[in-house]
Image 1: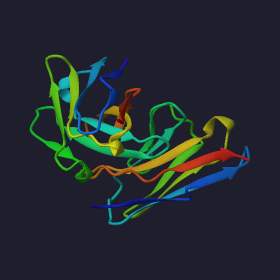
Image 2 (image 1 turned 90 degrees about the horizontal axis):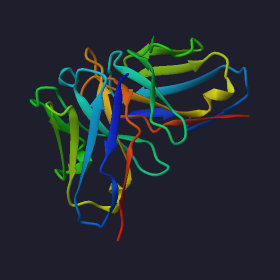
Image 3 (image 1 turned 90 degrees about the vertical axis):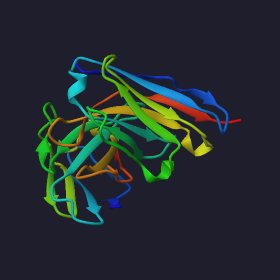
Length: 119
Length: 107
């Protein structure tokens, strides 16, 4: 069974940093591109970032303006999101999502971790 | 960047009704379009990919159509468990933009 489990969320002050993790199991992690998607309270889904299996390609939403960095450790079957210079508008549930191997739709999702940016 | 626009933003229908949600891309995306269902407090669930291919395990009352810029998600006979918010997503290339969502309720 495919499992994606996010962790690392919590309360952080504006300007602070946080590192999210997504631990995976039940599939060959090294074969899949992985993504982060976020959802602000009561709002829609916003794609955040993507990283391919070989760490060659990393893409980001323009709205992040270089504050977030995606990474992965294929030896630990884990995905990460380093978030710096956090703002109130970054408050959201952050989901990790797996891309299909052939196409780029998201076929598996974690349960999400809540990040709250507030003083 | 390509924008994805869904309509309507919310929808109320009766059990057994045929329901249609529309998604429009600001530029052509061929059939690189997915639909997701999200219930409150849960992560999104993939329903349809390649505009019209049903994900394994998804009830056959769900169907998708379209290509290029205009797409539809149809529920042939609405069931109480279909109450959710539905999102389209384009995946031809990054950014993998979602539509703003359509909240579906039972009348």
